[in-house]
Structure formats: C-alpha cells, structure tokens
Length: 374
Image 1: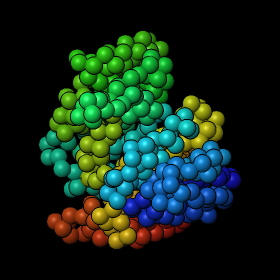
Image 2: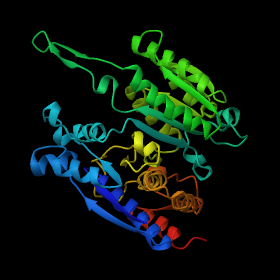
Image 3: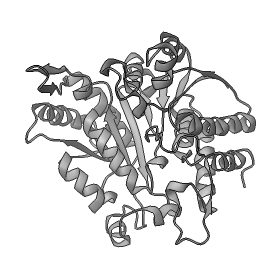
Image 4: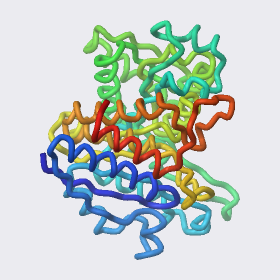
C-alpha cells in the first residue's frame, strides 16, 4: 500500500513522541511491504511562532490531501498570554472542525503488565472485572465538534461576567451515538450514555435521541448515567463499562480520568473520525495520544511514547484498513511491557524486574519487535 500521512508534531513533547510513532510505522512499512509518504506540517504554538497562526493554510490543505494525520500535542505556558482566537489549542480544534472529525474514540484498557501502575485496589479490579481478571477494557466515544467548546461565548459587564454556551442539535447527537452503538456491537454489547439530564436541557436531548435510536440496535444494552456518578463509578467499578458515549466537555474530562486508571495518561491513544472514515471510504482521520504537551519534560527523553505509538496503530486500522499491521504494533507494545520496560511515568521502584527506558529507547524497542516479531 502507498499512503500519505501528515505529521503534526506540534509543541512540547509532541515532536518526541511523534518521532517514535513514525519509527513504528516505518517498521510496519518494511515488514509488510508498504510505502508511507510522511509530510511534516506546523500546528499550535510552533505555527504561531513561525507564521502567526496556530493552523496555517498550508497545514489545513496538506492534511486534507493526506490519507491520515498523526498529531503530537499543542500548547504550553509560553503562549498563555496570546488572544483566545490564536491560542495553540485553537489550531487543533479548528483542524478537527475543518476535516469534519466529529467522533473521538478513546480506548482505555488496563494491560496486565501495568497492573502495578493502576492506583485502584486489587479488590476493586476483581469485583468490577468483566472477564474475571484484574483488568478493564472500555472505549469512550466523545463528540468533538459541538457543545460548549464551540458554542457562543463572551464577556459582559465590562468583562466582569463571562458565559459559554452548550448547544447541540439532534443531528450532531445522532451521528455520534450511531458510532457508539456500532462500537458496542463490535465489543460486549453495552452502551452507557453519560450526561447531566437532571439539570441540562441539552443532556435531555441526548437521552431522547438515544432512546429513539435504541430500537435499531436491539442487541445493545443501553443505559444512562449522570456525569458526576460516572466519574465516581470509574474509580469504584471500571469494569462495568464497555462503551461510554458523551458530549465534548464530559468526554474530555472522563477520558483523562480513565487514562489515570490505566497507569498513565501517556498510554492512551485516540482516533478522531468523520463520516467517510467511519465507513471506510478513505476520509482523513486524525490520531493523537491524549496527553498534553508536558513542556516541563520536553527535550529530556522522559516522555512516554506508547500513547502516540498506539495512536499510529489506530491510524493503520481505521484510515488505512490495515488490521493485521495495527495488531502487530499493539502486540509489540505489549511485548515491550511484558519484558519489563517502563517509561518514567510508569516506573515503580517496588518492581525489581522493571527496566527504565527513555522516550527514544522505548520507541526503538517497539519498532524492533514490529520488524522482528518473536
């Protein structure tokens, strides 16, 4: 296969983890006989410094011409004083919107080798496990292009009062929920819609749309949960969840909480998909680890690249239709963890067999296993 992949390293640790994800993709190309044409573009703070905009037109056009986008991270305190419309984060939000990427899939799985890194008690994991093992496996499906992040906002009373508006249409909700129902169909058949329907009118619309769709998915067990209860249940019994569907804001928060349960936010990948990419018709998807730019450790070879590498696996699966290759990357990551290698965020001195590995070494270990599987 020949495929064009846009690389958007961004800011902070973004360039470091993206480079390791590219190593894995290069290893896949060599092993399976593919050719990946990597094209680098600016975004976020680096673009702001270079050309004065967080999303240059060259980046937007280039991403639209590629088969997939691999993104690192944006932002940092050095740009905190920039006007809101030019903040680095606006580059990513605008890119998602422009590419029509409305569904964000964020898997959160506790891998067995990382059990010691999970902050939950063994008894909690055993009681909540879906398969009798000390693990959980869920996917959070987050709406990406609507809600409070894109609603009307502003200041009043000479700047002493501020407002942000949560707005959703039934169409926006329905298309997101169809993705969630489909994901549940391919997994364990359980979908939980998370909202705040006891307070918010927009959440009540989410429930109405979900109930209207449910008869079309008779094999799916549909439930509802308030977001505050869900936040509690994630630490009380995470194994009860299979697929969670929720709004932009709630999904942003809950997926970060879920990431902490896997051992580190550095472990979690994500895929941002649109109508065509979900149907396998080749529309560009955007893939990124969910961690931030972490400027405090940038350039120190301390960042965990596994979330970015697993994002590359999702890229192979969803945008390029290469399921076997995606699994090869995932198995390589698991193999490295089973061997005891850990990045700083996963390190536990109480585990004598572990081996500390920096960003570059961890990426190289995964790439080597992709190239030469055991």
